[in-house]
Length: 392
Image 1 (spheres, one colour):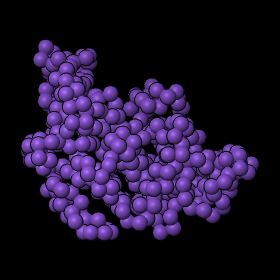
Image 2: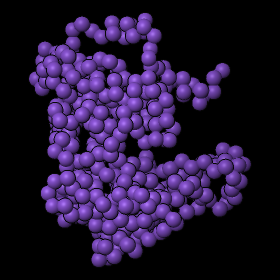
Image 3: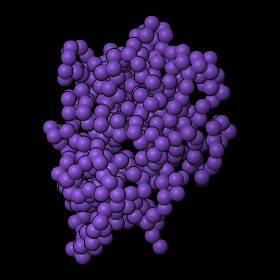
Image 4: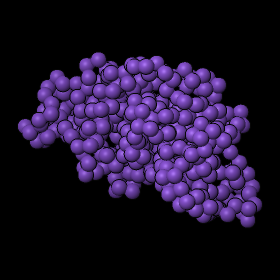
């Protein structure tokens, strides 16, 4: 019997096995219908982005498959359109994100997709660049516009601003007249953030203050209050939170405590988090005194406990006193529901247009060839790398 980990690895290899045997390739090509659906578009994929799969989310929405498609952020060229397609025609360059229940993977040479998941790709924007950055751009828009209702004059705190997602948040916020503070996780990232300048317009620094989060520094709250005149920030976007009660990895030590994030919020502030239910699963490989952990929910073994990060009553009280709110960032809702399809397409279109104009400049991502897609996806899924992009 295969172990769960080996089954997991096998699943990925089956999803992204490259290069496939000739007979399998032929079967896949034949499986595409000769006649497209009314609003379907047939696209030849030029590049696709690899991002971690949320298997629990797939289970929650009732998607249960032996093979899960990967590489859902795609860029390519339209080959054929359905009879009722109004947005595209053959030879158009397009970009989009495949829905959760898509039968196709972005690693396929040719895919069929509904026209309402695609937008036109500007000619000067490379397929590799847009496939690598599209999800980060969507997350930044969702966090700042949909959740936080960003407006000119607001103050924003971005945790780990040098990350691909953090950089998108910084550039988008500055474009809309928001004052930005951020944290850095290394001396190199600190220098990078201090030297950030817009590619168009006045060449003022994009970040008002860069706060060190490395070398055991814990100056987040006093520096934010100093920069905001004691008022706090209007918006805080995290890249991770940590507990004081447990032993921490070196990476976790760079994250702020949840109480610090709430403390830096001003009156009516918004905290946008990507953590599900505000909980982080932490596995401790040391023997723990069970009585000393009030947030302990289950014991897996004498040397391994499962701890939930949750908002304590004092934190809830502080949120109440500030009339502040917590929002959960889940960009998958855009393709999981058609309730706001028009807004979603507008966001995608705005992202690619701002990237083409140089307003949004994502971090360069080196493309990997198709035959390395399996290794790249496993690396991303194990969180050894945040994302990857494959050039077909």
